[in-house]
Every structure is written in C-alpha cells, then in structure tokens.
Length: 125
Image (cartoon, rainbow, N blue to C red):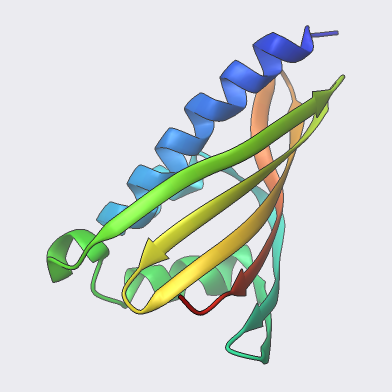
C-alpha cells in the first residue's frame, strides 16, 4: 500500500486540478478528479444541498466561471490525511459571494486517487 506521505502529495496535486477546474468552469478537468458515483451533500446558506455528480457538473457547465466573471477566487488546502487507500481533505473555496468549507473524501482506485464524496457548507465572512 502507498505510503501516506505519497498519498498526501498525490491528493494535494489532485486538489490543485480540482481548484483549477472550479476556477475555469472546466467540466473536462473536473471529470478527471471525481469518481462517477460521487455524491455531493451539505448545506448552502442554511438550505440542504444534495447533488449527484451529473447534476453538479451540469450546474458548473451552465454558470459563469469565476475566471470569466473576473471576481476573486481562492482555493485553499487546510489539511489532508491518508490511511492506506482512503483520504480526506478539508479545503476552503472562496468564490462569488460564497465562503465554502468542504470535506472531500478520496479513494485510491486502480492506482488513481479520486474524490468519492464532497461535503460542503457556506460560512459567512
């Protein structure tokens, strides 16, 4: 099994791609970081948020990307932990008028790390 340091480095690299995909609104890029069965759950401004990956990517495809909006964007890795073939990252994504805090769960499948669960909430400020 992969050393946890190697896993953390791999997940950090994957997170860079994830942030790039969100910033550019690139469905192609985002497809490379998510497992096809990924679920997205949480709350946004107090409202429940539940999406399949297909619905989430459709929303990304039909919104103006942060890059095209000219508004500030910041993706920040707060922490990453790995045990064997599973990992979790806590990240923050600031875009538009949102300050998203996310927990992203990863699984190493066929020698590739992929996001398998995205939990998200908006925190004012």
